[in-house]
Image (tube, rainbow, N blue to C red; front, side, top):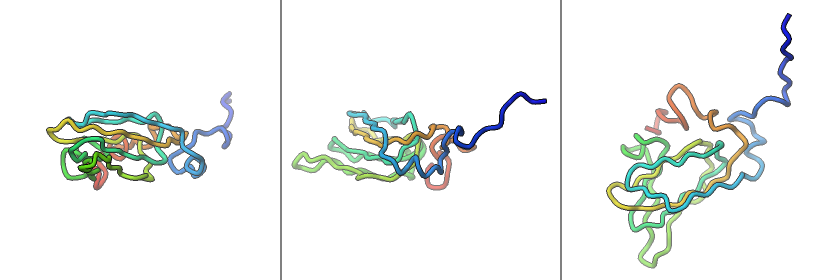
Length: 140
């Protein structure tokens, strides 16, 4: 006879598709002056609800979800600051991920990352292809 009690639904850990975790305001996360002259990984302690990347440099910064993505062709670009010195931003991106990668090839570009975090454990975005959707089509 087993001595383990059955798992009660309200005691289960929330998962990647737990709607309530995305409906509430995100726990704040901020990391500033991230040097991106080499591919740099920004790891989040929990799955994100949203992410914003702010480019403070005079060089475009690539943003992706794997090192291969930002080094290859699976990334998007946050433009360099303009001639008036105004910074550029990705805007608020509604993304559920556990990490992002920044890269400004060969130049000492810097960026800030601001995010709202859910209460979902970051291992929920890992699968057979790696963390944070790495290896998925379009991720790299």
